[in-house]
Image (cartoon, rainbow, N blue to C red):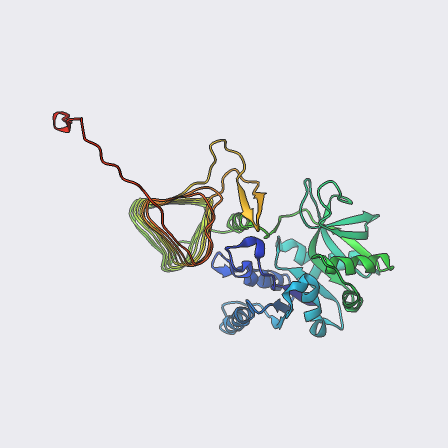
Length: 442
């Protein structure tokens, strides 16, 4: 069975995060984690679909993974062919058509890089537990029951068979409570390819419309229920949910790290080789610290994923946050935030993560205010960001890539890419009528 892994999305809703496929969780890019997850379940033949924005990085990753396997570091047998989706505006339909020429001639499993699930669903598929459930039918779609509206595809199901699929019907218009997870099995991808070629849509639902036409045309697809963890990465705060999922599964590792006697390590903490934990630092698990990073004196890290070659500087607290590689801090507070690569915070810089009324924090996403569903949510940054001393970031603020923010500012609005932010502080001098010399401390 071939697996078509869709990784060509441009992550528009995630900005300033450039590409979710290359977010590093526990030291590995997300797309690699998904490939290894599928390989561990027994799949070994992959078609990886990328776009012009990440195609070269995908090819480099595949080459690096192949070298790692030859070196014995990973004992997973994988054949991976990388193909390009040339027109990214064609969405998922274009991705499948791009893979069609190398994925035809047998059963195909289509998996989205958007959907993060537990290993069990892929293990069941490859053990024929789901494939067997499809029986003599044409395939199946994995579905999850939801209690509140999710902006995705909804399935209308009768007696276990899918009668129709509707993309983003709007709250109150759902045909049921089963959301389509993009884990789709086809005994033969040919009919889907033909339907995609015949289907046109001015919305982002060409794939769903083509699939719906197959169902209404007589092809039979089962709805396979899934009740485990599922998190699509559509918005920046979803990065934190995925981080929490991966952290929940780590096992403690501290060998290969240099830890001061006065440092405190509690719970499941994974320290990569070359990590240094200095005097009186505390790390409360679950937490991951990347290769070559330093947790300095009196620093506190809790419930966080720290990338490689970072410095959690003196008296800094990092709480429930995701930090990329080469993030430098000093006497900072970073809470419930997603920080990019090559970011430096001046001393005293803090990220606000809680409103006065403790209500949910919203974020501006492509001109629309979206509720994050979190009452604690801090800062999102792109790569290559600098802030001066004593800068304060309000909750739910986004800072673009290649940005410098001046000292002593309170940032309460999103900052676009390639900006240098300054502000005016007016100093007014008055006559001092208080004689300080007579106020003596004991």
